Length: 176
Image 1 (cartoon, rainbow, N blue to C red):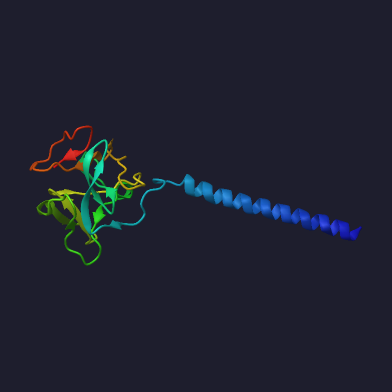
Image 2 (image 1 turned 90 degrees about the vertical axis):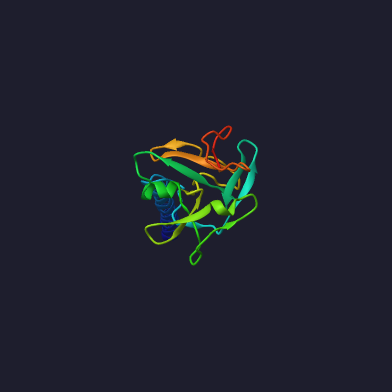
């Protein structure tokens, strides 16, 4: 009888132990999923040394960095600060680099840089800082042609021979 009672107590402890572990894991996942901030947003800077182009069926020829679409911002009255930069990480040069390389279809004369507060260099195109959008998860995705509290974000559509930016780039984007 003692052996049976010990077996049941031991089995009960194992079940309770597993239930407690599941509860702890569920609580941890809930804390991550519902924590303040932007779920899935970039948490560290991304870098790119080359800006190139990629074809997009809907928008045409877009600027990309590290195969991901880049965007410019027409700012609103709300400054793009820390929370914004998690959603819209700046395209930064790797440490030690002073200029981006122009890849296929990119006018090297339009590439430039801008120093950020921490001393890193953000890539610019035609004087406009470039950003990635955290919801673009695959090369060539364009989910960031939107307006939010920080302003109007547009993918950069390249148009051969065009010297000034235009706000009408077909179905979206800003052309250069």
